[in-house]
Image (cartoon, rainbow, N blue to C red):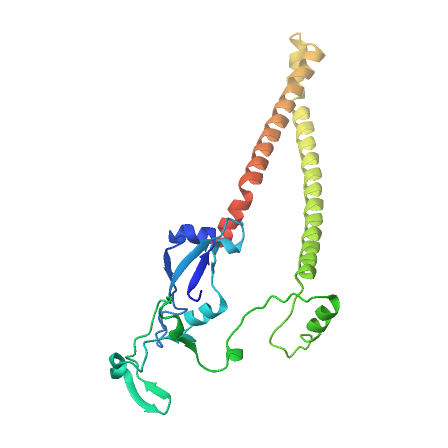
Length: 259
């Protein structure tokens, strides 16, 4: 019904509202001198968590959105005696009222019929329309109507847009993977260089171990164990960071985007 709304999951949690409760709209600007009345809307449902922008939204029908914008309103019956103070004059069936007329800020079954539209409904604002053509021919004809650069509106095909978007994402992914491989190879080369330089600098240490009776196998085992410890520590640290990123990376990115 006009004046009802459905909440997204996060919106319901943030507002602490559920079916049967009420939420109140807020003006687009605090400096709205026209004084559009906030609309008290009854919550008739809460959507399941979808992990999308829908979770933060409040859904109403298009006519309710026009009421919120102040394009549609309902007020007391000006033909009743109690509304006489708000009547400036009458011209036939037309009644001219002043600002003292009580406007309703809640739509109920009792006052629903008092809400009315002024002017031509085709001039009322719409930001987007979902069109579902019955066949390919109708789709082509519809898209052809919005090919002019002078049109203020544009038409997009979700499938084509998503394919272009995914193509871009996959292209970026290939560059990222290639960059990761290059960085990995450079890291391995740097690590190998560091180990070789370290072994070269510790040549006197190895000679000392040989002179005090250490066998070649024992000395090689000591050196190899140090390399293994360093590599194992790096692998464990990388595995831990990878696990944290896979578990909480998307949540962290969403939190950053919301802030």
